[in-house]
Image (cartoon, rainbow, N blue to C red; front, side):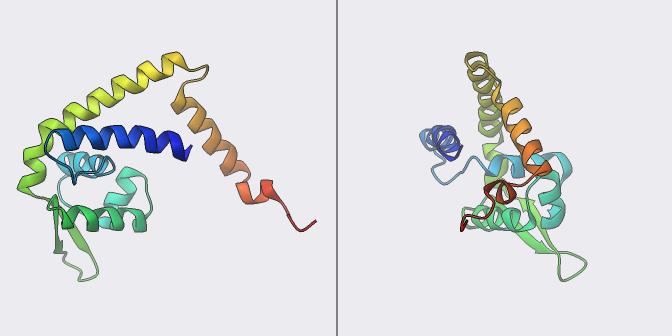
Length: 143
């Protein structure tokens, strides 16, 4: 699974580099798209919107801030940081949207070649692991 993800993500990252954004990572796109749709958000809400942990969203936002795609401002509560898109991210929106659409088409094409669509397989795998996690499936290895 990791290798498939690396192959797909690497191809998308290469596309961004070819278009002058070598520091843009594919995992930034859900953040950008959510902020465009919903406006500035606290990291907690952003994490929930894109379906990742608070820690994962925070790490991604830190990387995006270093590359100039987002800024963070204090919220009304000092514990909350509000994530905002920068002009650099907004300028990249046409490319980000075009890549997103092209990726969706490529996934549909890939799905047509597979015995089971990738999303269906991943969803079924996640459902099975929610019913019984992988650690329980491994069992006691000292036996």
